[in-house]
Length: 317
Image (cartoon, rainbow, N blue to C red):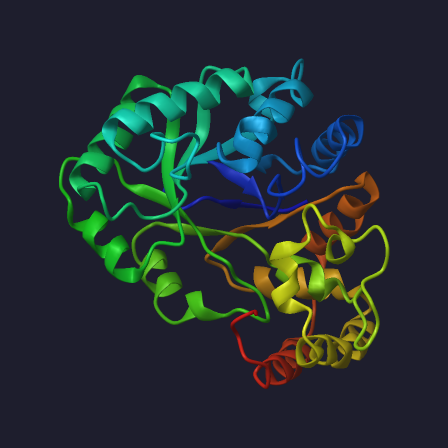
């Protein structure tokens, strides 16, 4: 495993991290989810990402149980707030940040998280209030650092302009060979201000693994075939997307890696990306993805893959 510094923080995070959206506490049974967490740690993956809204607290609860007995210094835990946790529990007001952070810590069975992230931008709360509450969270010791997910360049610039508040160290955008929007403004802006990317969906919900074939139904036991967790991938399962991935497979073969490793290595070629989040429903999936940390691919092959991807509309669905 390789590690990169997370923005201006002191955290050294594994370039492959473990996510829990749609899986732990919801789509994957407890023992197998716990086995995935333990295998991730064995592989040197030290960053685990979750959110309060994943399974309405179920993912955090599962992680709290799975990490019981694991030395706290051996992993970096990131969670988020913003999504609706109840009829009156949503957003990034001072009261919500205090309430949701305390609830997350209780479910996770720890006294602090390493990274507390704004899951989205809250246009209904003054940014000053949000940043002051996050600053108080850092100074109280309940989180070491703060980050955001899917904020616009304007949102980021507004936060950077505020004085006397804690600075963000991470951004969590969707980013993959099939979704390159952050390259235009978000990545350059963040790179200039000590903020790293922690990328979600680097495999486009699993489509970039190459397991889905054009003209064929999703294989059993895959996310695409699941009624409970398959909805987010449906927009990627279009013929033109699957045909593009099929055309990339020979490039991965030429590089001597799997399609998943090729796609993850492409994301990690960007030095502002500190880590790429992967999901796993089986421990052996992590072995393949973790190996991408050591993959070296000829940039010419990446250029050919980019040319193929450029022919596909970037928005799923």
